[in-house]
Amino acid sequence: MATGLDSDYLNAGLDRTQICKIEFREKGDATLESNFPKVLELAKKYEPEMTRFLRDMIAIPSESCQEEKVILRIKAEMEKAGFDKVTIDPMGNILGTIGHGKHLIAMDAHIDTVGVGNPDNWQYDPYKGHEDNEVIIGRGGSDQEGGMASMVYAGKIIKELGLEDDYTLAVVGSIQEEDCDGLCWQYILKEDILKPEFVVITEPTDGKIYRGHRGRMEIKVTTKGISCHGSAPERGDNAIYKMAPILSELRALHPNLKDHPFLGKGSLTVSEIFHTSPSRCAVADSCWISIDRRLTAGESGEYAMQQIKNLPAVKAAGAEVTMYTYERPSYTGLVYPTESYFPTWLIEENHPVCSTLTDTYRGLFKTEPVLDKWTFSTNGVSIMGRYGIPCIGFGPGHEDQAHAPNEKTWKKELVQAAAMYAVIPSLYVRRYADKMPSNTENLMKIGQ
Image (cartoon, rainbow, N blue to C red; front, side):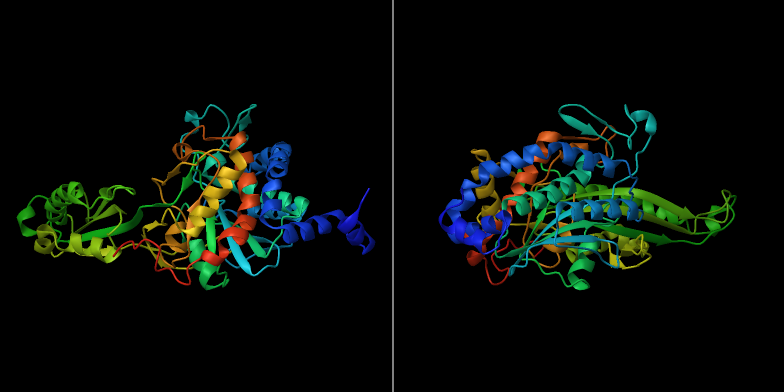
């Protein structure tokens, strides 16, 4: 039987969800913590639905620039879960929102995947997939459609328990990350004008909280020559020979790059080599290489480019050093060109955003979280690396499953992530929103 405030609210014509929402706001932090067991219970209850949704996404091939069908499947699930608004922007990213509060919080999952590679290396069909009591196997399970499944059902939990507070939660399904990490968020921040106070990146973290990773660049080095008949090579100028000492100096540069105690060492590798020549019986008149350059703290894009330009062999050959540009159309046909520069980012361990996640983890799971970093790159290169918006990482799956045959994710991690995502916004508003810096001066200075 309803009594006290409950009775008053019922007499006012409010339903149970509306009453929960009002009481949640009025009773404060203690009410939030009292909801932790209910959040975990619902997250576990929705495991079958999350599993089915994830398998539906896996079944839809969604390589970069081919994501339309999986975006529409996500839209249907968001609407079913009760999101307040679901939109698809002109680039093709999907944004589902819950709440109308003043604190804008975003959570991101890129929903494009890489291809399957050699199908013979898969034990199961990469799109039909496979599941047992513990794991789901299929392309995109860990990298990273599992994050989307957990986010959508976190939204459902928020609605069901009335956990809406003075925040607006934006759940983002971003595209083209595998092709050009962060491009989607360049568009979202500059064109959609979405400016969250922080972003949770749901790439796989193996149950840990990740607070950054190295950046990267895609660099092109070109040498020019003069072609002639291969029977008399002295008449020409061989561009491949000009490249040879450059390759040696690049190899020698790698072990001398900067190191960082948390993020690790900068790295460099030559990943591709090409040439032009009138025929196989001619001297090459141009040669160019691609360099995959990973950037640690203290290595900016300009710094890394200048390192290569200063190599004696580069100067002697008159080689051109440039950065690649990405300009492939999205599935909607939109072209949004950008340099292939993806800045390093790292958030401090005592930053309010990091504390939000560690408090949430402790409260839900009654144990201490492990703080770590990704080896690979994420959309954080734009969100925090370019624009200084704080990022933090927590997602289902394991990094070593990314791009691998027989990629899998773990059902228990889908449940844990859904619980985390359901609590993070309210805990942030209650404990840390008023502790956020007015600017990004206390964020670790990367690439300076």
